[in-house]
Length: 468
Image (cartoon, rainbow, N blue to C red; front, top):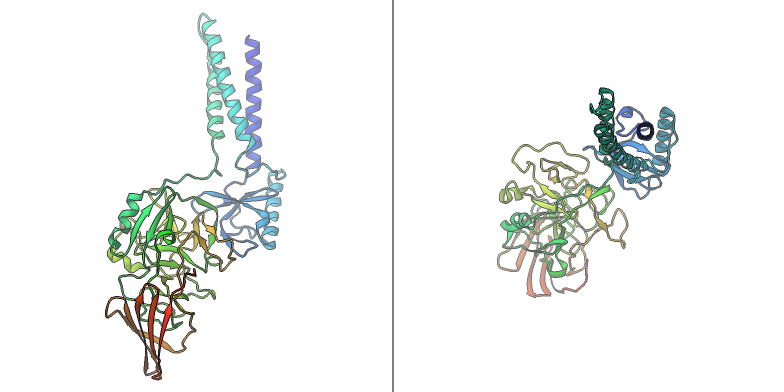
């Protein structure tokens, strides 16, 4: 029996060494830090679709590369998804690492299921079994117990077993589980705006219903005006805004610089949607004068929305989120949730905080709200980048045909003298023009246009049941 145990111990030790050496060869470059000065290591990667992916090269195989994020987490990306330049550079880097480590890249490197951890776990369990059997055999069959030499072998085998077991459960590429967002927390965040916002939820989404019209004033200060005006929208029922209750970290964060220039990317806590900082021409809407003093304007359906972070909501919301991105993560103002100064932001325009859950921040500089989606979002298959849009989301209903921009016009005031009636005043040179409109029925509005040259026109528009 002793000879059998000795042979088993020797075989077990050889297998342990083999597995540890093999795995250290395959993953010799995990982390990517030893090559940060290499010209072949990129921090920004371009996909064939034009979308940008951020992360440092960590390791790779014939088919995949592993990118390390700022927080140390890693994502797996098919090499074929990169543009030609990216594919060439990443294969060059893989070949370089292969030569340094004297091995060829294989299919198993970088996969979420690896044969080495599986075998390590198997042999660690076998080690424990042999250890127990060996201990019992020596202790109960020896009048003086175990010798020092035997005890030393037991200790070595024990440490090998513990080390192997710990190594086998180390899975850096597993999807990280995120705690489900508390509906009680969400209710608290939206409660200060309950006069114009209603909320509900089911097992998957937290729903926000509103008219899209904020309690603050609008339109003043716009210098590049498309002649659209704010009309209340029916963001209710099946057309409510939907915030995922269970966010999921994206393997590939989708950049808002090359995506989602149509539709909303977030919903503010006052029920007003937040669109991409870039307009559909790829321009920064704020810098080209399209936005009012509150960071918003009206779209082609006369739907009011923001294009930058509504930081003015801090006055009411305090240290609570001012918005939620449509991937489910909150957007805070320029302070952390505990009131401390905002920490540095990553390429997505956010970071992990003390609760180890991700959140975004609103700032006064591009990208203002979301630079790339940290969480998974579903893109409408009927749309293509860069004018793709996220689903689900609420849609505006057009009242009248979209107007053209009025050169030289600046909006000087916007007011609602009576309920459901509005007056917008604009200036061209030294002359003033007016757009006065009021609600007649649930689907009809009367417009009176008085342009800056004194021409006047009255029109009644019938709202159609057509999504934007």
